[in-house]
Image (tube, rainbow, N blue to C red; front, side):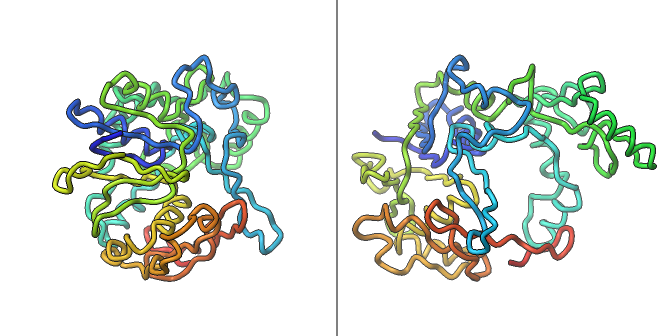
Length: 336
């Protein structure tokens, strides 16, 4: 199996990335997903189809704060489409000042005006057509009108407005604060994940291969360059790597924030120098993470904050712990 790009993780972002990258017919793309894939809507599980409530039946089973005996669930989907295939379908954007705050912290290109075009490009809003909303994107957006609300929801809206809260018909309009129906990625009762929107429009492309039910153990590197991946059963991908000068153009790693640190940790010292470039003190220097059987050693690696501080054991079925960030204010850095 040879390819130009490997996308690790077919979640919310991975499906988008695989779809967009495979638009170039000369680029061979491989999408690897640990969970199952349902290319035919007729085989889509009923709870994944149903947009009325979230489902946790297709999940990694992570829990947080086990040491405190609180047993807080941390839903992370294990299915093509990721959490967009199991969540509550809310499509509510962040506050513009948060995006602008990221730029102030040294992240150019993330201002609200910079990302607004991307928001508009991905969506097809059924309720609004103006400078804030898109109409030609693959992801449908709509808000439930009053006749579709149940009695409890109607009572809540009426009670909130009676107390003086502003009624808001569009929560994605910058600057609004109030009560009203949330924009959702649902159509005709169906959850419109990135698997049934972005990825669906790319499935027929001969240059896109989807490999479901396949767990990635490590990222393989030559020097500081990612050249492939190794599956949990030890299989290298791509098999029969091209000559170094014709190596992979990219190995995008679009795991969730939980899985990414775990995968990099299990990749051993080969990524040590690469990680130093971005600042964190690496926990990858111990050779045990790249020798012998890595399956058992991937159960509870330590996650590392970008400032180099350990933030506890990465959640997993065997040894979970998450420390939640404490906000220092809107648009500011978060401390752990």
